[in-house]
Amino acid sequence: MTLSDAPATDKCQCTRAKGDYEIEGELGTTVICPDCHLEEATFREPDNAEQADFISERDVYIAFKGSPSLIRIAEKHPSDQLIKKAVRKREKGQEAVRDLIRNYGISTVVATIRILLDDHVFTCTDGARRRFPDLFPEEQESQALD
Image 1 (cartoon, rainbow, N blue to C red):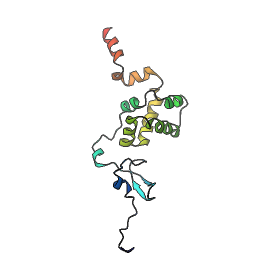
Image 2 (image 1 turned 120 degrees about the vertical axis):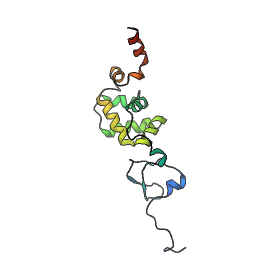
Image 3 (image 1 turned 135 degrees about the vertical axis):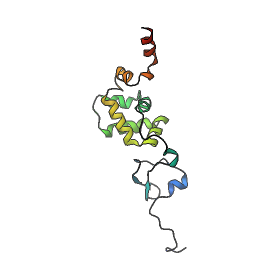
Image 4 (image 1 turned 90 degrees about the vertical axis):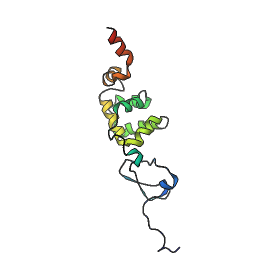
């Protein structure tokens, strides 16, 4: 095969060859492949295309409830970079966090956490209870008895 016969491609084919569709980066952008150093797109795969475009604040709360990293920075009005660092730390041990990032992208997860932090949902049980009453069934039962 001569150089002129070789298929010309400037896009990474590594992820397709490996079957690894968990490309690091924001959806709809391109990043450089660490294997071949060519661009790779970070678009949703067809099986994810039917999912809702809006992330559930409830799912984010459940995934990050009790996160020591997030609680530690919550009262400091953290930058998106600090929130992202806490997300990456939690991602290592939590499948739910990996799913959120894979389905919605890290910037959406960070933005949702920012909203929940601004409303003190992670630091105040009352704030979480008001926002997600279905996650606190013992409170609903005691109110029903009154």
